[in-house]
Image (cartoon, rainbow, N blue to C red):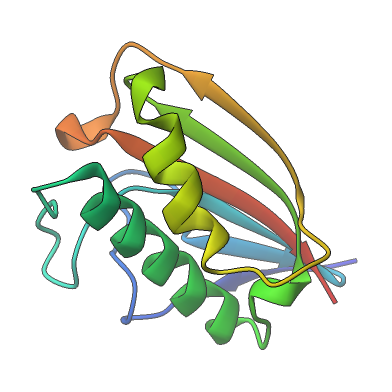
Length: 125
């Protein structure tokens, strides 16, 4: 199988030597998304606002690969404060109706650009 680089101008551009997402066969691997807007600025405010932007960015990457949230099979959530879990979980849940993906959530000491939440996903057709 040949890997295909997925790129869209509708999601934040990489801030390092990585691809936004890689499609290998029918499986999509998305790099971790933080709450960067289209201009590369971190969305600040509440953890809910950050999470909404992260999920929007993920949606744009899925769309660029011809997929949507129903194709997500695994997510990884990284939080700088586990006390934000319930708020992040509530925003995250808005993107799914049923058949939820597998997931883990871990607390980390810091995230790029001072973000408070980062989410990466694996999706498949």
